[in-house]
Length: 175
Image 1 (tube, rainbow, N blue to C red):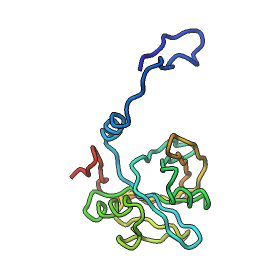
Image 2: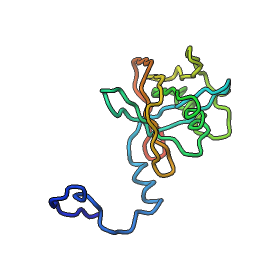
Image 3: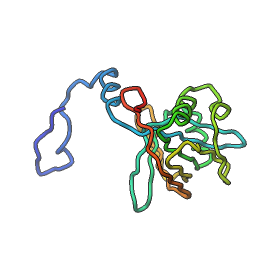
Image 4: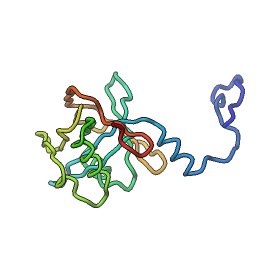
């Protein structure tokens, strides 16, 4: 990508020149090179639990406090979050139980809630006990982002404990 020189109109200061885009394979290699934490995002809607493993989770703002999670547009977890306006996140710890939790929630079509231990919050949302941090959030904003939806949430409950987070890099968990 080339960058256009600055001019009097700053709206075009960083506009890319017309160039071919990176291939899907190249982009996957780039995204896989980001060292990320691993989290499980859950929702509870009409008596049913929904959840998925995410690595696209980040703090966005301190004032107001905002957390971002990116979910596939086809995700049943996303649909439950959109219906209820609430979700929970568990930032997983670096231990074997947490890795099993991440893998269980990464497999669509399986009931991860039957495979791993989860703790029920008073709101009905579930969090993982194999986490260094947990939060319950209320949806504040939602944005389209290609094949994903970016959900911004305001935390209404937070729990943080000692321990190291589970890290993910180039399609594997780091020891």
